[in-house]
Image 1 (cartoon, one colour):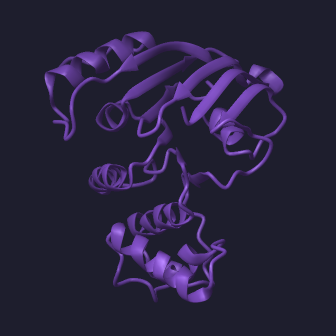
Image 2 (cartoon, helix red, strand yellow; image 1 turned 180 degrees about the horizontal axis):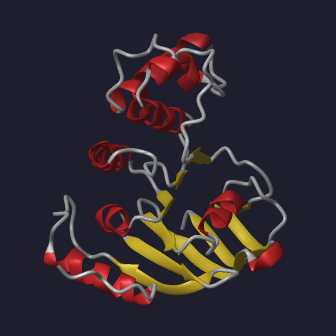
Length: 244
């Protein structure tokens, strides 16, 4: 087991946050956190990442209790959060602690992995939104995390770029044997990417249901199984599907 969460509780003013959330993540799984706005999805991700230490309960990665940023955890945020004064290569190198030559080799490797091997000398202002998010993914992977956290990483992108990056994540997941926990508002995205989808409900958010997606990859975005699961998730979220 890579990640263990036991009765995680973090409540803010107005009952925002989460209450008594428990789940485990196995090596190689992609887990989706899904729910309406304010259900605590990003709160969970921030506590796992060690960015919010004011929680109750237990969070452990490989048996280590999370009490701050952990070397085994990488994060991809909703915005790329790149340094505009650094080149693409320098952004991916940032935070690596090997020698300069090794850092450059690692950064170049992961830039090739995300399809940006020829963009290493560009600056942020020269990148499209999709390219910037690819750089952010490469930077997170370059640190060799045991667990990759993704907080709605594609929400600001157009539909076609979003699908391209979803496929990119799956390609890297398969090659690097990644373990991923991701927050999303997009049910179709969760169904396409995830092995399990944890649905949060209420304020503070609690686990309402968990859905296992048994369909093998590569998945057909229009498959009957995914359509049935989507209806179940919509029902769980108390949202009626629209029929045309």
